[in-house]
Image (cartoon, rainbow, N blue to C red; front, side, top):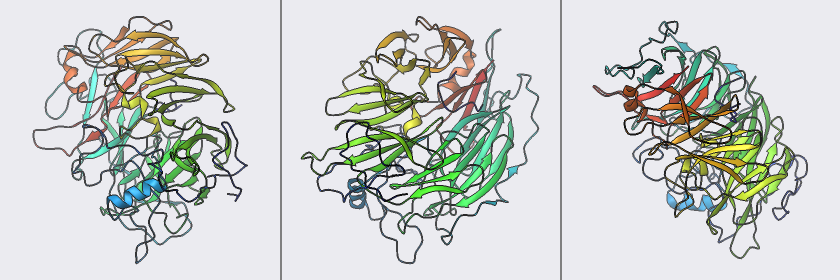
Length: 568
């Protein structure tokens, strides 16, 4: 059991007031609840994130840099079409943040390009002729002696010792705009592992990393969910065209099991101001939820039919979504009577087929939500910046609190989510839930809520809300919990001084890590460029997959490592 919900694939007009108490349930179908006019003096609503620290997010000169927050769109520009809700500069952005914001979640994407749109109309699922697999080279049958190294002659398996795990490494060979593009995935489906980037979705052979197929998209990506369905169906957002001013207008289905593109539909605008350059997307069951500026729509993954949608605003407005085993929505509920302009954050479980809330829970004023650690059971991080504390909340199936206690340890920005500019609820790859226990990468708290390096695994009891034990990584190394298998916790230990990366186990009672898969010493150099703040990693089928969060165009005598794997 991995504790993750991805990686390996196996509107009524009823009023809903934001001053309802904790645990209050909205009237059936009330999504989103009614929102009053924004009040003067409100600070940035939940979902706003401060500019990222150095090393996070796209470089300043990246022409398709993804914004981390949205405000309500501006009125349509003369001449029609979807326009940029932030066109007009910082003053417009600040005003938008005061009025409302939508945090992109669910591992959402954001390598963006394109402009314009077709005439609005009801979406009709249709096939696409250009988004088809390109020719793929033949793949060897997995003797473990595949290419391994890259075109620069570097061999991560040089000097490999008996018992060490052979590494394969693939580089980016795609020409990219500006300073490069973000990568999304990795998703293992059968004998391939898949990633998405810019205008392509690519599969590599699990055994040796050779390319097996590639789906070329007509226009660049502008939304990617945290994971495909259990059967391997992925739905991504794509731009109207290749212009740098293009809007995110369509959804494209891709079958990761076959490498074939499926239906493509336009996302119909919910109102005259519904336009955006990126979608926040999550998949739950057969529903892909598409979020933009306080607007939400749901579509069938199977055939692209619209299932639900709303342009209503009200007392509370949506700020984020999480997907996987469940569909959850986050809302911000302003209180016009609060002298300090404080609002409350609400979390709901939603019916993926209709968007109707099943239950809701409202946090006390001053608290905001960070990352999700598990969707089933639902486990969330929350923080109070005024009190400088954070807690872990475990929910029961009915939305009632199972445990909610202040955490005495620290976690990195990857796994806390407060103000680090990273991408949404599902960005923590360092947390695993098994049974009644959360295993999370952490360390000793510092002067602030976050820490720079996770050098411990902390076991946290979800019933009592208490820490059970701490297990330290080797000195100077970072550790990531990956899964629980056969009663043992599997962890990835990042490269350190003189050591390459390794997979180790921890006993359920804690203790020192025991290495079960050691990569060759020569692989340390390649593994070290998969930086902790941006790497996307998955353990699936006995293999570790590391995906660089960002790659650049190939250059003479330079390579950009895109994906690396080793395992059993």
